[in-house]
Every structure is written in C-alpha cells, then in structure tokens.
Length: 122
Image (tube, rainbow, N blue to C red; front, side, top):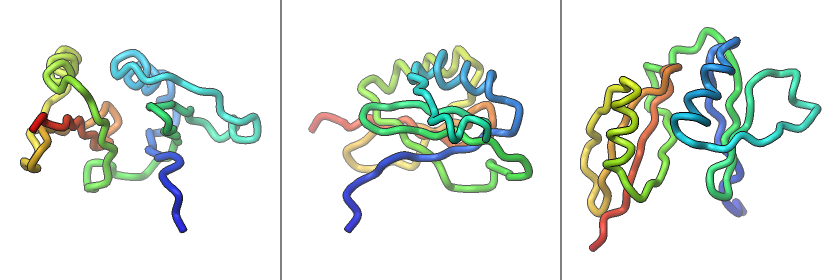
C-alpha cells in the first residue's frame, strides 16, 4: 500500500546549482535542507515545501522542454506569483481551466515545467 508522497525529484543541468539555488530559494522562497553526507558528492541539493521535499538533481542531455512532467505548487495568492515571476522576466502561460482552481504555468530557468495553482473559494 502506498502511504503518501515522500519527495519529488527534478533535474537541472550539471554545474548550475548556484543559479538554481538563487531561483528556487531566493525567487520562489523555498528552504534548502541538508542532503545526507552519502549523497552530497552526486551534485544537486534538496529543498523543503510544507511537509514534502524536492530533490534537485543534476544531469545533462535531457530536453526538459519536450515533456509534460512538472511540479505544481499550491499557493494562496496566485496574483502575487504572477507579478513576482513576471518581475524576473519569466513568461507566464495560462493553463487549461480546471473547475474549482485558478492556475498558470511557466518554465524555470532550466526548462522544467512548473505550475502554480490556487483553490478557488466556492
């Protein structure tokens, strides 16, 4: 039986950890957490979001722009994120409407597809 979701892994190109930490920690405001010593030599870093972790790994030779794979962050103020990301010159893409939610998508600086989603009050 699956109990729940433990973590999500996304990837960035090798050698872009500093740029990725700037985007994920400074722009999105996520908190970096320490990786176990046994995994530190593999590159990348870990983040925490609520009670879940995001593992940011490194790899080359993968075209992130050609996949539907993505991570969706649930937010309370979608308009804040629309403005904040626009200030960083990140192109906002309106998503297909889903009943009960407002959302948009964007690409992170490494080509990963990302969604911001807010539950609408009924």
